[in-house]
Length: 551
Image (cartoon, rainbow, N blue to C red):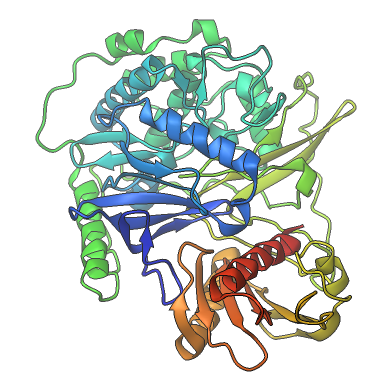
């Protein structure tokens, strides 16, 4: 949680932007305030996806799906505009840490707390299924422990069950599936049609994680994890005996053998009412979150969260689950998506082969020079592994909304010229240099006369060398130094942050935009156009420049 920064948007629709809650490969979530002062979470796609009609169609489906479910167990939708220049969705801001954050910070939960959690999640799934939806991505990071009970968030990849064609498991095309491998159901891992029973399987994995600190199927690689989801039997030896049978029944390989939400309620048994739903450590995390919000609202720095007291026994704090190393995914292998936004769609897996005598081996990622090529990895926001099975090649991808965007290479000027909406002569190389922090490059289009094809300048700056979060942070710091010196006004609702710079004799309008660890500057000599026309053209060029660096 942080301030938006000098180049960030001040308003989205009717909501005043207060801060940034999360940033991912496909979008970001902003903390906003309505005209009545109510806090909202505003999900907004990244700038260069705004022109993708397929992405807009998925976003419209997300809005429609979210509005079908009441706010008793989810974050209720307040307003949305999927047709805005940058589409957005505003929902009630739910204060509370995620289940994943709680277990990571203070340890696994006691049996009585998990029983209460199970009851709340069962009610949430019943409500989602009653609306004719399958959630498809129930995992610890999508479960919030709010003060008054549990909330399930992120319906970005939920799917309407009625009228779904046989084999149509994807959001954009037949044969594409999405989800988080460690919490997928077997039928989801195999790309088969999903029913509400798939969410019940995910529920079993989530409950096991709450009591043991890890998914019962988390392996050393995504491939190993997916293989175990389909073939392996979960190790539930650390699950307390009182809930072991319930979890085991949820994790039945056969969807027909899993209990329905109504049957789950009977298995869970009565849960006594309580004024405080969770252990004191959770409320400590809630208080720290409120202090951060108060800091943002007061104009000061967001308060750093204080360490939370440990939960009652057991106090085992799990080791982090292994994250598979990201590998590049070709642009034609993944379509943009959205989280709290939907993970990128991934090709449907062929039937998983019979268990081999030796565990399958994950291919290592290929190396690529950052000096040339057009390829982006959404590091920490997406983990992918290629599986060769028979004659098929399958890419599994996982996306997290709260992870930073990571670009890995810049295009050449000639490559960029083929994608930017400029009609000038072939560009000349202005600058290209390797810095201690990454790569900088600029291209100048000489123009063909002001009325035919005015001059233009596009520059890229890419931070490399560290992890995704560190690179994004370093680029943000450099961008904000420039914004403090050169900004004349913010470029609203564009990029992670952006600003309009001062226009000198050479340029009628100058736009600077940052997404993750990449910044782009666009200068246009559009003196024959009005200011507004020049700015629209600059935005179009900036979107294309960002896309040119992701391929």
